[in-house]
Image 1 (tube, helix red, strand yellow):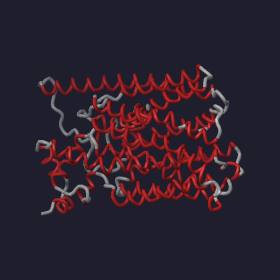
Image 2 (cartoon, rainbow, N blue to C red):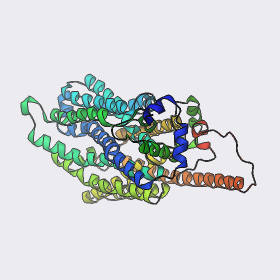
Image 3 (tube, rainbow, N blue to C red):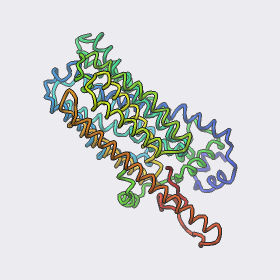
Length: 475
């Protein structure tokens, strides 16, 4: 009987046992990972790329006359930023959508979200006042919030030792977006202003929105769902029984549970966990014109383009999280010190390079760390949602504290303080997790030596989350 049809009728336990009993064929596994890398990582990266382009180009559009055309005040402009980054992305969408992926195929969740924010971004070109702008930014936020689930989705497909580099490649696309957004805005501002009766800022949203819509359609068509759903229902990329066995074996090796369900009890467990709570205007003020400002933003992003995959690869290569994460924070701290310490414009740009070179890989490594220190699908989805509340909360703070040009002492000083606190928090988290891993290792050794009774009916990771005695935290 066909394996896919059989799995529809019977539980997966027998296939899981068979997969775990067989020695994993490393050559076949490498081939499987290459397949995943050619489809999953590029789709997630492109989703992030266009999400950041569509979200961030409101800043470049402002430099191209967007604010004057809509007759909105500075405060209204910042309100348009805030409704996207906080109320939608953090509270209203991400966690529920993360749970939705256990019910609805992931390709529909991600593809639908990309279609939504691509359409909203394109329609911003038609806005003529503050009210429609807010509505479209709200819809943009609904769609873009889902992209943060990329790291949760990746943790279902990749082992912990593979996750940081893939997360880094996905988030690396945001540095490319930052790198290219200035170039796109420069080209649009220079060549398309008043073409066919539209202003440059309108063309900016059209040029970036339409390809986003195309990506949403492509995602629905070719992206695989969760691994266990692929084993049950099949997918054009992964068809053989051997690949299905490998998928299930890799899922369990990544400390995931086959056919995990939404478990409301895990929300309460997660809320009690201390780990849950861990974790272009500036350039214009330096004295450049509008178009040159967009070109200068390229310089810091170019450093992040290099540092993000490099630091993320090192995190996986040496199977470490805390050390490379702390190294990224220290790099950004150096950048803020340079910016605060001198009024020289060249030095300020250099400081921005240090900040970007540390901040971007820190986000990708941090995302991989967060997803792998929480067991149970519901708890892991909750952890990502809560983390985004803090991340987007800091984005709100950023729109309010950078209000004293040209040096922005207050804004840079506050962010410097945040980075120092984050560095201290990283040390605390590292030693707490290290201590817990050592305690569980001692208890397991005692059971093997007969110095402690064997555990019976312990349950799965879905039952006990990361409090399961066999769980180990990546540090």
